[in-house]
Image (tube, rainbow, N blue to C red; front, side, top):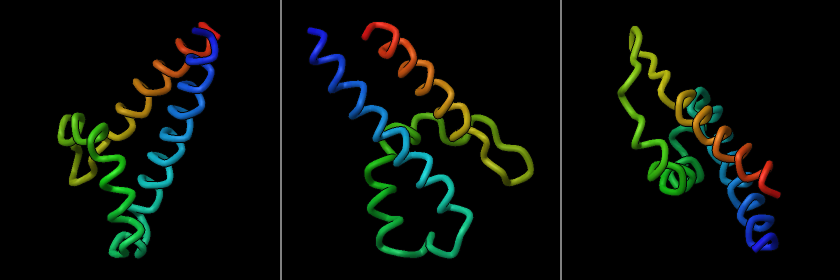
Length: 81
């Protein structure tokens, strides 16, 4: 069971970094590239849940909420390891 948690933690951690790259690239012209669309297909199933909850003056702050919740889940798994 511990080995499963170990591998799950690192897979989820890689997904966390992919989400950060996706959010950072959304501020650049790369947003119109095929690479960005592929990242979007990977990340949207999770971040799409939070989309549109906290919007202030055309800026969507919900990815931050999603990342905070995701980080909380990662910390729970890290403590279990």
